[in-house]
Image (cartoon, rainbow over all chains, first blue to last red; front, side, top):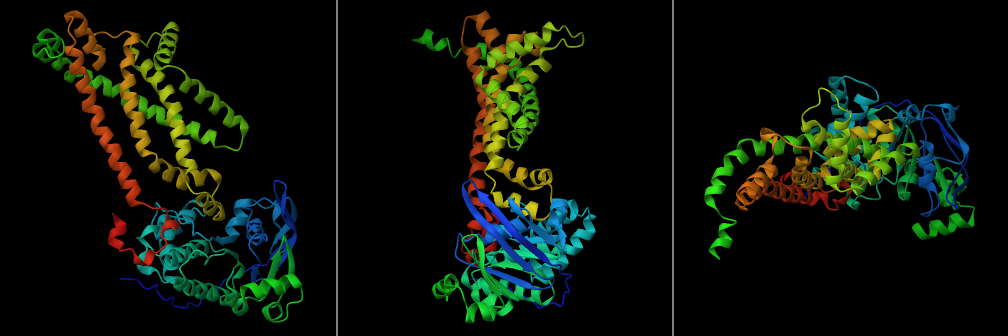
Length: 256
Length: 249
């Protein structure tokens, strides 16, 4: 028997999204310059989708935004404020992230996954953290899975827990790194729906994705990266229907 | 031929030595082994965390320590540490036990440190990244997420290390033991020397096996459970097909 991925009840959360901006970010892995001066602006409450061929540096740029990668040059601004003087752990509390491979903690239940950072970063008492975990699991349609461990959940359910875990910290920006790439095709839609709900709720989002349909429908801005730079950016209609650079035209002809 | 067998299977001699072996020898061996394993685990955990640090001045001493205590024969370490401490003539330190436990902990700490380090390193780096992305500090990520997973994976290796400690504890006789302090090996050896017959040592061997064989099987069963039970989260390609009851095992 297959367990259908539980449909998400659309909820009317309001999020206080903040703007996030990358200016001339550079980064090298040894001799290879992966980012060669990338710029990106996600205004408060808007969704930026980053597309491009693999190896173009889009995931690296995303990981620079919350300091998982250390940039060699460039500035990151959160709500207009330069983050280089900010405590890195405070920055990361304000910028949530969801990963391709979920990265749930396998030795903890769904609820405990959410509670961990609430307890140890936000220093919340147990009962309060538990209440928030239950609420967040309900928000992503997994109210009845609180006591399940990651291995007992489907890929789609695991990714929902990961999203709930990030949202529980009440971030002002959410980063999504190819979050549907590791999912079975039939589970992708539910996750994209959940993300679209978030976007409608006013969350600022930077989404690295291969889902062109999602980018077209949900993004306010689509950014096309290639070889470590932003080649072209603009509203989805412009990027998808009237691409100007040859590299973007080639890319679109390959993926669409 | 009969005389040859008699040298190993003199039931009367075995009957004589058993009360001592089971009476206090077994207990003394276990006291030495358990205490050394516990203290060795503490040393090992410190070494593992130091060895994984980004700071060279934490890594270097851990490396030197490990090379040193892994590279020396157990007998030599026990003698040097033991006699070294005794030569300091600390008035309250008269029993060889604390000193032997210290020497064995220092040694097993080096091995356990390497076991913990490999366990911690085997944890997917996405786990640490998820922690950092949530705002946990490096120390919190290690303590709450990475170490608990790493330690679980190295349980079989840890039980093997405990078996090695049980066997090495026989070397404590170098430090001189009064009658009631003797552990399994010394009791068997004493009786074998005074009787000129190997049967007491055979009985001693059986007592060691009584401890080590069940542990060996424990390793195997933990090993099997770890392999069948908890697959890494990302490896479940077709999760919707997994019966939840099956996944619980």
